Image (cartoon, rainbow, N blue to C red; front, side):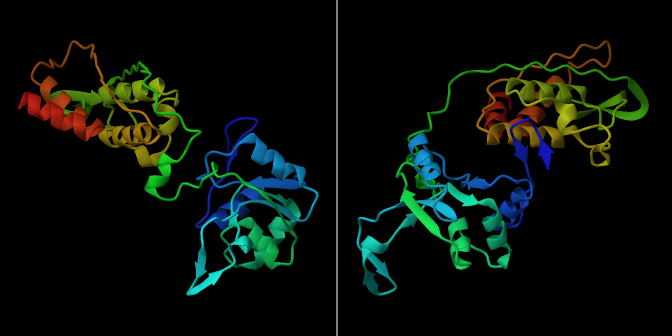
Length: 284
């Protein structure tokens, strides 16, 4: 568990939805707990209000949708008026939900677990907009999600290290021959470290020391391109796109004229395959 603010606590997940929920419930001591699927994006205030208003009726309050199509179960057509499509969030009495999840049986939602132990389920009208994202085409049915922003964010990174005799110099992702390396926990590639800091700074995600602390043994002498790859994947996975990177190296030695093109090639390959192939076609 790691606490990031006074309002949000992140809890390590389990191997299933239910185990993750059990881990989270260990941190809960309130009378009620509201549980929602992270894949259910567009939950509006009116739906939440309908759920909360029924909190004292039964053991769990569950939103649902009616079915308008004909429903066939197996080979039998069944009464669609008796069919409910269950949604989240679901509001449970905390002690009852904790007890229900101890059965050892895996349930697809909280109401199934509580109902199986004889609990009382209260149903309220859900909302079609609160669609659960399951399939790729579901991404086109999220009315509350705005189109990606075209805003451009700029980050600035800076790094400096002492020289260390007997250690190879890694700079811009390549080995510089006949030059002492940098004293550092990793390979000491100051160019990549500055680039990492600028990428993280642009999106407000801290700095290299927070992600890869110098007291962590697994980063000892690590290739900085590996760190850059991790940061690139993080930056793009949370929705950003790298447009351009400019690196300035201030040094009397070594002379970098013969290495600049290879550095650019290496960094383009490490940060984006599209940039890599674009660079390759323009320069080779």
